[in-house]
Image (cartoon, rainbow, N blue to C red; front, side, top):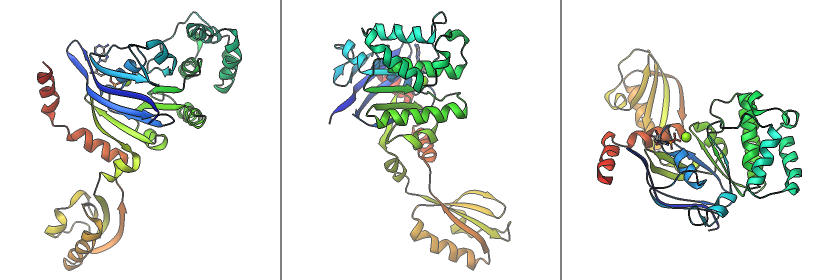
Amino acid sequence: MAEAIRVEGLHKRYATVHALRGVDLAVARGEFFGLLGPNGAGKTTLIGILAGLVRPTAGRAAVMGHDVRRRWRQARRALGLVPQELVYDPFFTVREILWLQSGYFGLGRANRAWIEELLEVLNLTAKADANLHDLSGGMKRRVLIAQALVHRPPVVVLDEPTAGVDVELRQALWHFTRRLHAEGHTIVLTTHYLEEAEALCGRIAILHQGMLRALDTKAGLLARHPWRCLCLELDPPGAPLPEAVAALVSEREGGRVKLRLHRLNDQIGAVLDALRTAGLRIRDLRTEEPGLEEVFLELVHEAPAGEAAAAEREAG
Ligand SMILES: Nc1ncnc2c1ncn2[C@@H]1O[C@H](COP(=O)(O)OP(=O)(O)O)[C@@H](O)[C@H]1O
Ligand SMILES: [Mg+2]
């Protein structure tokens, strides 16, 4: 596989916090890859290692085949990072920031046409001579994206780019990252918005407590859920349910009952028969597929509470 990113046995400890506990993963060139996890899962740490900003405690990481420690210059050049935090130098104008960034990568005047194009594409041209200090949060985020792309990196990593962003900018960001992907960039997007990962990403890794809980396509993750929901509206609303049906209830509000069936096709007939026998009328019926959110919650809650503590002790 032509790999954009490879991570092997990656560990990171900050003093007492074990942020990554042995992560292995590979992202192929041209993928739109989602890195999903709740706050504190280790997403920013993992990305920081890829970008050469965080030193791993153990393990290896490479970007476009360049080890981030031994060949850090090449690895850094291959990666464009849009950081989670809005960090910027308030004393420069937008254009100056981009020139500086360009210079940092040893790119001279020849790169200025590209910078103007980036300003244009990201709707920053009108603000190009404004100090970063005077820009709105949304505009600053656009500048961070331009900065990440100044050196035309093949791999673009966006760390929660839409956290706290308004709907309009979020749409614009989605559109822009899709375009980058279509133009051949490998995209790694971290987010804790499940709908975002669902809408954009081909494969999704779920990180939790510094460990990879799952790595699969969207369809693959959903297929891990063997169950389906059967939603019924029963009449009379408050009537007791037959025992076999009551055992399957996941939610109930008066006559509205949600059942969780492990094998929809085998069980649905038996459920309906039992209800009829009990003299209940079915006023409405529909089935529901589990979403990525259910899969995510299940994976995240699957981790026994003591597991993290045990892993911590084990690592000494
Ligand atoms: N510089 C740091 N010093 C100490 N602890 C840190 C530092 N950065 C992150 N952590 C801790 O490491 C864990 C993972 O954090 P992070 O990688 O930021 O997760 P995420 O981006 O998924 O929210 C958290 O418990 C966090 O508090
Ligand atoms: Mg983070």
